Length: 294
Image 1 (spheres, one colour):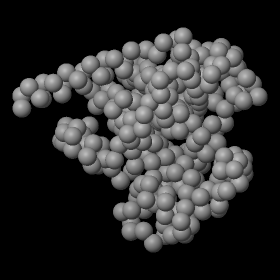
Image 2 (cartoon, helix red, strand yellow):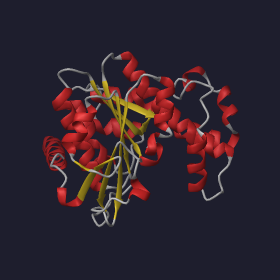
Image 3 (cartoon, rainbow, N blue to C red):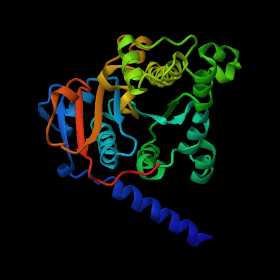
């Protein structure tokens, strides 16, 4: 038993140490919104002027996950003595916040945390290092996503179906009625769906966006002067749409910074027709690198 515990600790230490290594600069390029060359230092400077930083990823992008860890760590090192830093994650649903908090404060073991929190399949390789860093530094972690069962409910039955939820269940989603998507975001989403979407499906996506932004805004309102770094799929925040739009509704004076990450074959070339304006910073990563598995 003692050997098993020691082995578990050793594996955890090696895992975090290896993940904490910086991403190889040969496998990514950083640009500003117009395509000018930039770097991590420029992002960290911009982070200091923001309230919420939205890190948009492809969920299986191993290079992007290394960069997210580096941005989070460097933001803490730069601003952690001046501001409360919080990590916010699409990857955990709001109804498991209590489980996440219990783990962060050592009330429960990691085994019980994982068995009760419905982590994504790539949690251990891609998100665990950030959570463990937050745990080590005693930083809050926000489970920001709407419970998937309610997202599914809206896609099947429409947004009005949420009205019948119990008060506790309603506390796990954005306040009702949540705002509709902007036309620009709706058009983008419908194009992604190839014309096969519906109002209910769009509303289910909007619930997702609104809930994440609401809990990011709530964290900031409860912690004056704080800084939130939120991870989500890039589609949710590209071009400052979706989650960012809802964040501005919940926190009109909130300063949002969008970093959009995409893996592409020609990551050393900035194609303005594809990438201009999709983020305040755009990180193109090497598509030839091994992908994470969910």
